[in-house]
Amino acid sequence: MNYGDIPQTDEFGNIMGKVKASETAFTLGGARQLTPRLSLGLNLRFGVSTLDVYQSTALASDVGVLYADTARRFSAAMVLRNIGTQISTFSNQRENLPYDIQVGFSKRLRYLPFRISVIAHHLHQWEIRHDDPRLQDSQTLLFGGDQSTSDGNPGLDNFFRHFTFSGEFLLGRNESFRIRLGYNHLRKKELSVQNYRSLAGFSGGVGIRVSRFRIDVGYAAYHLAGGVLHFGIGTNLKDFF
Image 1 (spheres, one colour):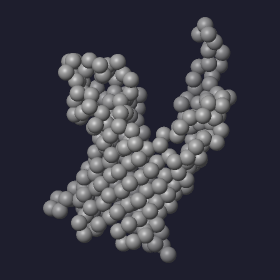
Image 2 (tube, helix red, strand yellow):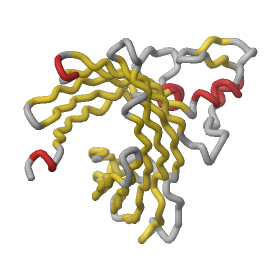
Image 3 (tube, helix red, strand yellow):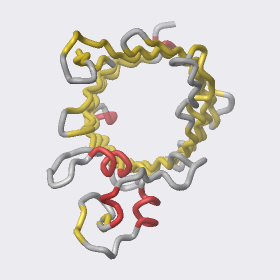
Image 4 (cartoon, helix red, strand yellow):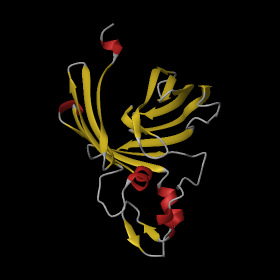
């Protein structure tokens, strides 16, 4: 992720040059099926964060366990993300990695080509609302939008910030074409701009299987300033050996 050219100024606001800022992560991951219903996955990640002449590096890992019951079309998983530590720091200031515990489940409906998924995140920390003065006199609705009132429900807002909801339509012969939609309440509340409408927190995408490959394209809206476009190609190596 490159943040572009940032103006470098003195204390009077005079522009003296430009500052480079970027973050890069190299991730190596793998998974193995332990039993017909249980699988284990592991990621190893090396991260580099750069701000002008300062640089910090870190080593982290993700560990996940997946339970999949194909007969009942149900799956559940637990993931421990960003377990690790900094190798080098910014100006000898050591910081914690964004550690997270996540639990999710997915259920394919029996009589409809649709799969619903729910992910609970930040399970190690209950209060995840940031210090925002607007929260003191606004009521947070269940799925986005604020109303100017003093009868807010911060507990309900904080509760739904722990969840991400998504759905997937499985269409066509052998379910080769898929349409996906998602909503992240935490992202919606933290990245929305007051008095402006945006799709922050919402995401969508499509996937199609061509021969032995699956091609996926998705877009996640983060802010009025823009979003992130994802493109992926996947295959099963067993099909080639």
